[in-house]
Image (cartoon, rainbow, N blue to C red; front, side):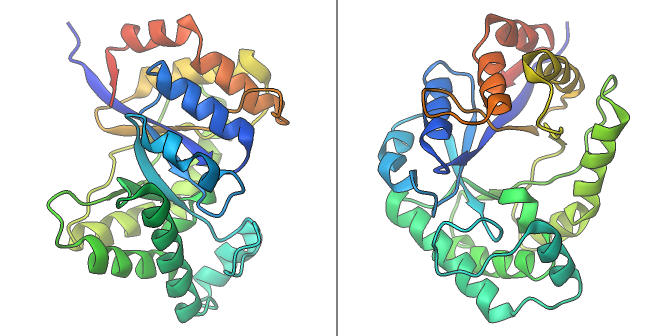
Length: 264
């Protein structure tokens, strides 16, 4: 009999809009999620933070340097941010201030430290940003017996996925996974083992169901699988609604059981 594997199924973008919050809270209630990553400057984070706090989910900071919610931090499109980070053109003091402010807001509204930290569009692994993040984490949480962990974007190969999706996932990994893991380990912060859930946000329920079965078939103990569900009358993204329908389906629980996966 196959040994049970633990998987962290993480829904990103809590706080981005009412539909994302509604989907995450509904999936949490029926035990279909492990974690929720929070855009602390999003328009609905403050409104629903207490509802999220009342769930059993791990909750994390979804560090943001790309989306403008009217926050004081400067943001830029992801392609420009990646280039600026690797060319060392990001102003260190500005990045440090943004990291500290977002952690302050999370702690203020959730009443505690985050269980983990990741990045919107995976910005947490980029040069300068990762250094500022690890320094701030060490200052705030280095003394704690249970410290926040960091999302590692290390590609987990899933047979049956289209080549284009595997290439996209590998590209995300190359942008900073290995270095982030090394730096985190040096400061005694843990990371997940592998990463799944990267796709092109197209294809409806049919495609997402196929991808999900491939991802679950590839899961190793301690992996993270990200998702981006939305639901309700205010939902505007059909593909994110498709994710919600798949995750809330009976089939999803059957796939977990078939692969001996336990959500944690």
